[in-house]
Amino acid sequence: MIDYGNTAFVLICSAMVCFMTPGLAFFYCGLVRRKNALTIMMQSFVAMGVVAVVWFVCGFSLDFGKDAGGIIGGLEYAFLNGVGLQASSTYAPSIPFLAFFLFQLMFAVITPALITGAFADRVSFKSYLIFLALWCPLVYAPCAHWIWGGGFLQKLGAVDFAGGIAIHTAAGMAALASILFVGKRTIRPDEDTRPYSVPYIALGTGILWFGWFGFNGGSALAANGTAAVAFINTAIAGATAMVTWLLLAWRKDGHPSIVEAMTGAVAGLATVTPASGYVALWAAALIGVAAGVVCRLAIRFRSRKAWDDALGRMGCTWRGRHVRLFASGRFCPEKFRRCGWLDRRESTSIPDPTSGCGRCCSVLLCGYIRSAESNPVLCAGQSFSGGGTGRFGQPVS
Image 1 (tube, rainbow, N blue to C red):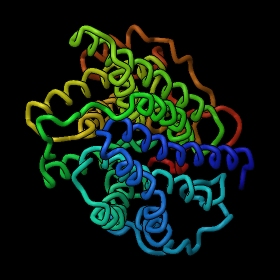
Image 2: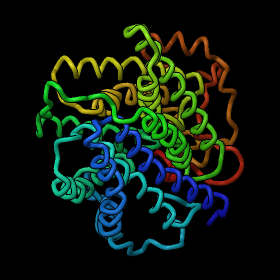
Image 3: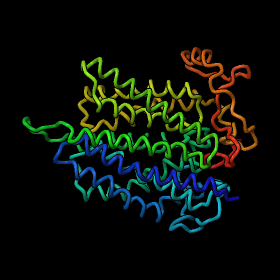
């Protein structure tokens, strides 16, 4: 049954995620050299056109069509065949299937745009267009199908609330492959390599942070408690990662840097994404701190390996995957994966997210979060009243 409140919420979140791509364009534009500013901005914006066409033609169907061997979907939804105003009982039972298509389109658009920060200054526009047209159906659609469309990872019990694995890990691996393939930039000894515009970096980060609330919160696919928890976890993880990264950079360089602070915030937002709807509020803070430390170390590791990742995308998206995978698995054990987010048969009350924090933190240091009736941990999937069952509404057997 269509819920108008949920539909409005998902449509608004879709627009917020759409706004992230222009935000990414400003962020990257500010980071590159002056002569490449317009080129990388164009690369982000053109993804909104090329990927949308590919997603309409076959991308959505390859992602969410009938599973074929756990690897990829079928073509039954090609050209939006069978995608209409009725809800899908499989993926989004309370909103029109078209609204679900739109929300997933915005994810598909920003994913390849993320990769451009790695090979900035080295790929021609024609080559980039070919890359866009091929990477979406051949790489992104299968990866997203594995975790969201009934693929083998989903069958194995892997969880990814809002795309940290399907989107950021795929983009990070592609970034690493691209810099190894295209090689290093040619930079003259007297060339100015400073960021083109620090205000653009700050503006882009602000837009990205705003859009990330829709990115993570909208993945609940309903205006409910799950979305509220995803919103607050997004804010907390981004804030703690920004502060952590800033302090580490301040200690090393001897002065604060707005570029370092903004980079840390983006790293934290990306890292909490797959767990944003699952974990307790204190866990989101720990994820942010870990993201600030691990992703910053990844940037230093990249420098030692002499990989020419122009804007550090490999470090923030690929190496951050270790924190994402650990957080999604350790903070959301099997008992919690069967909560209301994925199993509509469960209770609809959320336990106190602050109870048991001390014990849970001490257990975390040993590498595992154990659940116990006397130590309730927030399971974000248990939704408040307001309809909806969370992302895709699929029960876990």
